[in-house]
Length: 263
Ligand SMILES: NC(=O)c1ccc[n+]([C@@H]2O[C@H](COP(=O)([O-])OP(=O)(O)OC[C@H]3O[C@@H](n4cnc5c(N)ncnc54)[C@H](O)[C@@H]3O)[C@@H](O)[C@H]2O)c1
Image (cartoon, rainbow, N blue to C red; front, side, top):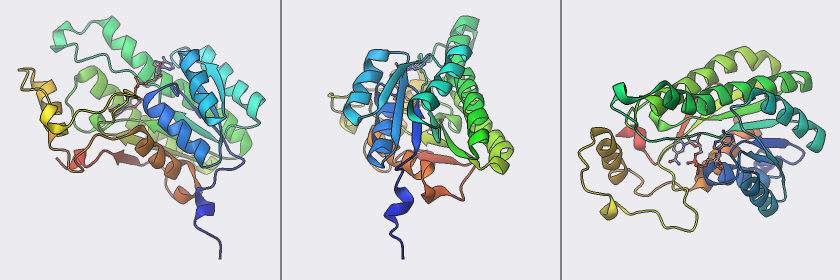
């Protein structure tokens, strides 16, 4: 009988994590490395990508996911440097604030966010799918958000994450015959300011008068599991989606949210 640990083992696999210099991306890159994968950490900020890579024994590169030429080159360079591309984690994403009411949201504000959260995910999926089809399989994990299903932080961000969910399902269907599983991981509130303790409920600010911000603060205060998420908790969920544990799983939206979506 084999050990279940073998299902988790990513030895021999190569992962590319975008936006891996800090926050959730760093947690995911670390967890994948802990499971045995060789990890290419990319980020628009090369310095932080290099720091993560140094900590986990991986490699690093600069990448702005909103630039399609950089994306194509980065995925090819991952194969050149590490031998294959078995797991892609599309983590790089922006939240630029509410920005509303809606009539105040400029084209520039909209495009600044969608170019990263949506165009970036598409460019990376396209480049990786091309390589993974030639390889005969792979895993793509797109980082969505609970905001894809519960509006609250503004149309620009909420809309972008709903797009990520449907891009995931659409590609799961298209790429399944090629052995490529495509899934979305949907973090709930996850504390990404390393070195600073997350606020506890009692420190949630009083009502601000902004209905969107108040909705989010209220949900955080009532989070069923009672604490902010940690990037490594997102990393554990990513290991599930990257490994043989999820061999029969594609096209899902996996909340890792402390119960947020039950509220
Ligand atoms: N933190 C949360 O509570 C939360 C909740 C739901 C979803 N998410 C999603 O998780 C992902 C990571 O969020 P986070 O909170 O860790 O953010 P973060 O700001 O802590 O880290 C994001 C990283 O992405 C990099 N980045 C930004 N723009 C980039 C670009 N154009 N190309 C490449 N890298 C770029 C940044 O330099 C940074 O290292 C995002 O997609 C975000 O929307 C976060």
